[in-house]
Image 1 (cartoon, rainbow, N blue to C red):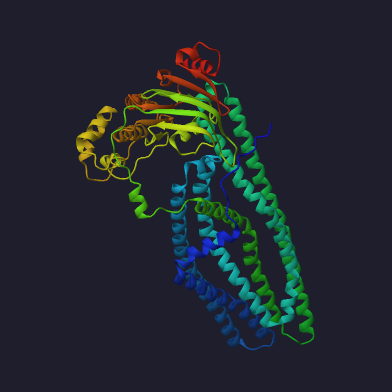
Image 2 (image 1 turned 90 degrees about the horizontal axis):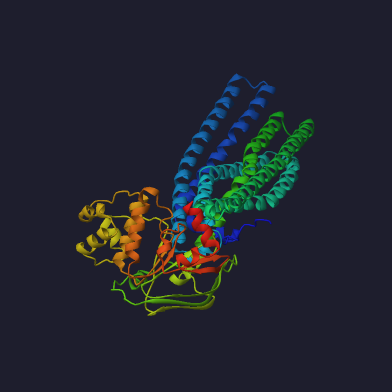
Length: 576
């Protein structure tokens, strides 16, 4: 069976990427124009050296005298020094401009990523978003530091050299055109193939990362169900696919090298041959032929840089397209009025809230993964535990109950309907500010005694003394961050709480303390509990075992343990 990577988040078109680049550059109009002028001047000064060398050849061949030769030598040196200095100046200005533009792009991408709905992120592989805000941002940043200066210097150098060659003698410029078919054919073949290869490289890298993430996050479940070999095979298969595509990328570049070298050979040979004929007929001097050959040779480096750098340009372009895809996918940023309207209103929770699901189904539009025909009743004040392997559908159901995903079939009823579930995931977040600032995110009007009460209740007495601190918050380890998150949930006082593997990223040192805090949070609340470890699950009033998006088993801990099935296998493996 072929392991096909899951469809990923959308990728912007080239036209849309250009629109975003122009928008970013418009924020720095003057610096952009100044940078272009500096590169143009540097390229023009670069023509001085070959022109002076040609004059030196003519001066020597006509016995013009040592003074004339020295004058042209001084001119060549001055032109080379001036070109180098202006190029350094242009590169310095460009570096600052590129870094500012990249900073704007990063802010736009991360702000857009934070506004993405949970259903959008889950519709595909989570690692795709992660690879975009890490690997693609790095690829674009690397291109900004290396490729953009090369692209500008090479582009201006090629343009100025061609103008100078044409001004020297149009026939010599026409002779140099003999190299153009090699460049065009090689570049066309490279672009046609590399566009597919390098995009596939990024896709397969994201697929490989996803396989690794799922294997690491679900290690306990995989071990319990004896599926670790399957997970390792999946990781290995995707890693091999990624390596094969990278090797194909190397082959594509090697084919381009042959075309470029052939073009340089043919073009230079044509110019020298045309120069020989023209000079023999007295149309030009030997010095002019020398200048033409040097100007054409001067094109070797920028043309080579430009074409050899196409793979980096392609990677950067694909990275930009993937990043712009996030920007375009994110909903519009809410206005200040909307944010004020949506601010949390702290109320005491209802004491009797139940959750009722009837034939609930949900499918991600892109991947087709999801859940089907889930019927479940969670009585007020009780806990329903959802267990199963990674991808079985338990987290999807939890997000449907939380309202992150609208059910595509069936009904979800929370009684009363005004109740909003509180969702606590495995992701660890320590927000800026003090301990009190972190707690007041859900209850801005909470007083000191209320915050002390919830901290003590979840076993976070270590944080009580920090409540009166006005300085910047200190960095906390993962266990204390999650204790603080549970205290925050307790302060919000929700009637329904959803705990989606809340201890998954908590180390062994703090796991017992965090699980004890979760038991306090669950007390007298309607709770949906998802966990790979079955010890906390065993105390739930009902347990639902998921497989392939459906409820494969359900019952209490004792009932499931007495029955052959996934739950019993899972429990015995963990107990062993």
